[in-house]
Length: 276
Image 1: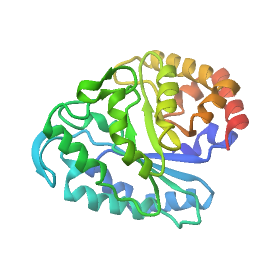
Image 2: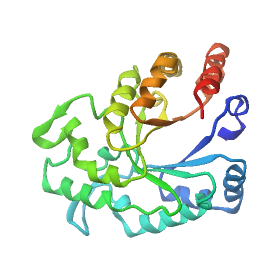
Image 3: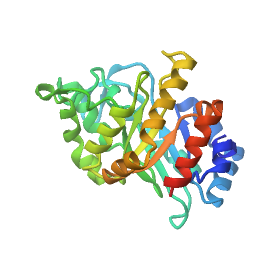
Image 4: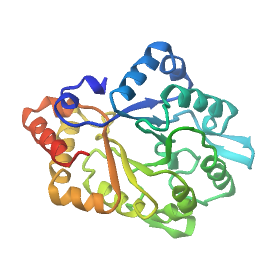
């Protein structure tokens, strides 16, 4: 657990993240033992952060907006009930530490056609339904962008950077905006660019940062992560990110940090210096 890691004991870590990957996670995440863990973390002053993700196969189905092509679970009746259970488990009193919720991380990959707003009517309907299909009382909620969205632009179909403006109302009505950074070569440009662009719509959270371990060796993941952190966790870099709206940053794993004493010392100093 993140709370038990060395970096959490030696630096002012104030937020602990958990992943919900689908219905198979619901029973164990909401059982009494895990409830006690979450309650204990809140009592100790930690903000909790829940990341929801769906990787079920894409299909064509009927939703409230009509025929939809994409991943069905986030638009299902079950999803709404499952989110209610998670909200009860993770949520606390309004006067206590916040519960941050990143809904549908990498949500632009959920329709049958990725990364675009209006390539056809089915994908458009999927997004219209998804944007308003939110439920998380006593929480601060955002949609979760994939961190690659500003790398290109295709205005004709609302793709790339042009996709973001179509979610302006949804982002401004949310409590914050979030994105991930998991590129296998470098995340520096993505993190800076996404923070700058999304910061126009509200406070920005880097919801999960770690180079992709499925398509890269452990050595590559560790090396890229270290380069990311040594480049980004400097006084001038942090100042620029904060100026553009960044307020929170979540590492997916502490293993690369714990692996290197030099990197551990660097990150510990950075968190002690810049953490709030």
